[in-house]
Length: 179
Image (cartoon, rainbow, N blue to C red; front, side):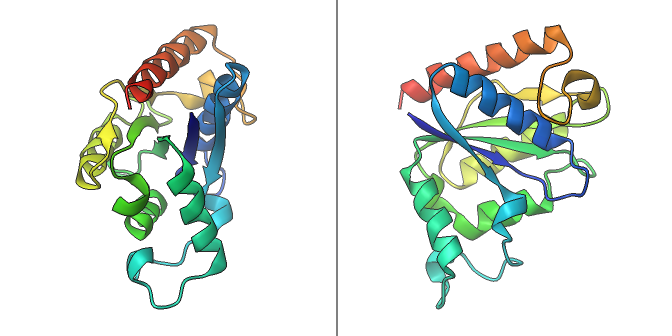
């Protein structure tokens, strides 16, 4: 299994990246091959067209596309901005689209500084996953009060969050194994 964790924020001081780091660490310690696709490092241009339809493709976007094609599943991590997913994650999904994601299992982790953990973003992201013909895992990881759960390096500081994250990962691995 080769899982890509998509860190879906490019915002300065982003808190959702803490969750991507924590998930990556936990899954790696379980022996799962996984890595983070950090949208802060890809430098995606504003959406003009899907990668497959662009007349000129940058080497970096082709490289990312190949990484995505080689993966067996994804975890999308998004902050909740104004009740929705981050524009950088939407741009990422629209740029690559069905060729890279269709038919694959995708789990959703949403993050907020508030109590609800970005549930509105998580629900809208699951609908978007269906639109790219992928399979959203029913169980989501909603991380409220993220600063109380994880430090900036993604280390768990609230022991009860460890259980919540483990339950989410176990559900995803079971879901992904069915594919």
